[in-house]
Amino acid sequence: MITGSLVALVTPMSPAGELDWDGLDKLIDLHIASGTDAIVAVGTTGESATLDCQEHCLVIKHVVQRVAGRIAVIAGTGANSTKEAIELTQAAKEAGVDACLLVTPYYNKPTQEGLYQHFKAIAEAVDVPQILYNVPGRTACDLLPETALRLAEIANIVGIKEATGDLERAKLLIKKAPEGFAIYSGDDATALELILLGGQGNISVTANVAPGQMAKICALGLEGKADEARQLNRRIDHLHRDLFVESNPIPVKWALHEMGFIDSGIRLPLTPLSENYRVRIRESLKAAELV
Image (cartoon, rainbow, N blue to C red; front, side, top):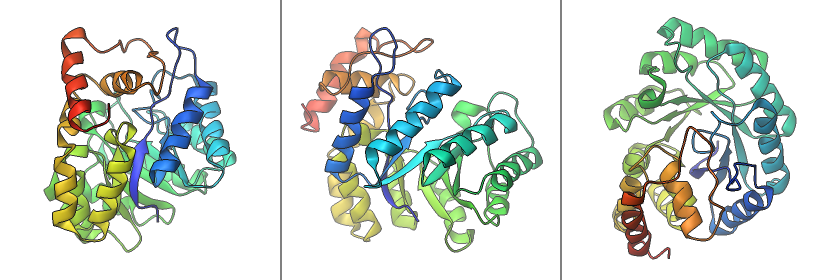
């Protein structure tokens, strides 16, 4: 089981929107040196929606090769087409990932039975550990706990990223999930509390800019050291809020550029962070002693 701080890694790009492989290598090395437990490549934060299929697979393969087994690699391979999700998941398996992260189908709004059959089909088609990803605020599709628990009975469906921020829902999943099924937070603001309830980690946006701090917070949470973890989390909790002033990954990519880690590129229809939020992000980074 993969536990701890799992960074939802950005995909660095040039100002013209071309993939920046050197920038990606630098980020990977930073996370390994900072104690990040796993890298999630080409998820929402990695701009999966604007990478074409070839780029998507190339980034996954590149991350696996650069990491070289030092930490776990999870590939975002979800799609609103079951066939496409199977193809991406198969490609990720062949690249050597440790697991795949599959978002609920977006836009076409399947029923709960449709969701079950979708994820079941992918699990049966590709023998690789698979983590469900529920983020209804983006997908207009909510994977309900009863459906997630039904899917948890499938051997290679090994966890869920629950990004609703609903701790009561997380508590229910943790209580009823079979042994070995991981519950991850996908909401930085409530991630520590989910871990303290018995969750296994946080698939984090904040970890992009504060990898060492997030790794420590998650480790303390997993050890049950609640007071110490909360004290450390309070030092960066403003980041959990401010990195979402505009749609993710707009603020976090701008922050990483401001910190000197990546170039300024982001792909349409996403645009660079609005001028009126830049002072706020700068001050947030300063308060966290990151710049």
